[in-house]
Length: 442
Ligand code: SAH
Image (cartoon, rainbow, N blue to C red):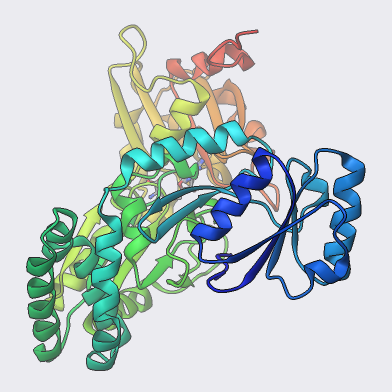
């Protein structure tokens, strides 16, 4: 919450550096600061928008905190989080553009370090850019009734040429450019949006690409697979429309033509749409069909690659997919016949020195095992099953090919997450039989 204190009474009770500092901050926010002695009563606090207390003793602080609360005033007591109704975050202030950082009291040092980073990343003239936006606010809102179009205008204003001029100190030039853009938007008859077919990676939000993270912040609407975890959806712009289109093995979800039609409809209406898919959109993701549908409709589309499950699972389980001694080839294959798997493909995959990353294979483990054994793969070939790869609940089982169906059984319970099967000599390297990849340094 950012509180408007302009012209309002703020009580600062107690003496010393902390009290002085708080009085100064309140004054700089435009408050009328009233300094109170340690003997102040509830009557002295009455009518204040906020109270700051710092007497130096727990007893003194407690008495004043009760007095302020009796007057119905929210209280901050220096260095006593338990007595606080609100805290003072570390802030970065760029002439009215304010970033507040709180660790919930856990670590003021961490907050200060983060502040340093944000200070370094935020252009000095951010305040001028905010002022530019403010001068256009009423005008733009009146002239551009369409919400998506309006957001497009604002996005261009704060990221495009006008913003660059404002940040470089040319405020008159920035205003000129912004006026031109406002005019252009107003005259455009039908805005066209864009679809981004985006890979969300295997589940760990830190494995999103920078571009994916940025597009999640720009989207008007996000059509996402059910497989994409909440931790990633949480990175989306807060008022983006979130639409789950199902697509989890075992549940039906929306039919593919339905999804494609919805993409086309939304882009035609001018929206920036992110189609967010697990892993990579072009690896068992039907991303190709969505691109085709948009192109056929003559609409703009971009594809943003993601870390596919095989790469994510291999990395976090410590399985190198190729290895100078054990594997000179790796194949991504589906274990699911309905998803394009064919019986003819198996013989070419059975060779030694060849790693298989099998998607959608856990529920078909007996089938996969039989095809590979038929094709001549050695029954003692190492296998690993990685469930919920890269997620907090990742679980890895290892064994040999002849055992695959038994191993898979524990990864196909009702509430099981997605699992990937890795077959090949390299599977034996899975985090050296349960040891963590990096030994913990004590
Ligand atoms: N486009 C996705 C694959 C979609 S098919 C990608 O590139 O990763 C769905 C299959 O992907 C699942 O059945 C499972 O085999 C695999 N998968 C996706 N995420 C996974 C994860 N976090 N851990 C293990 N397997 C995963």
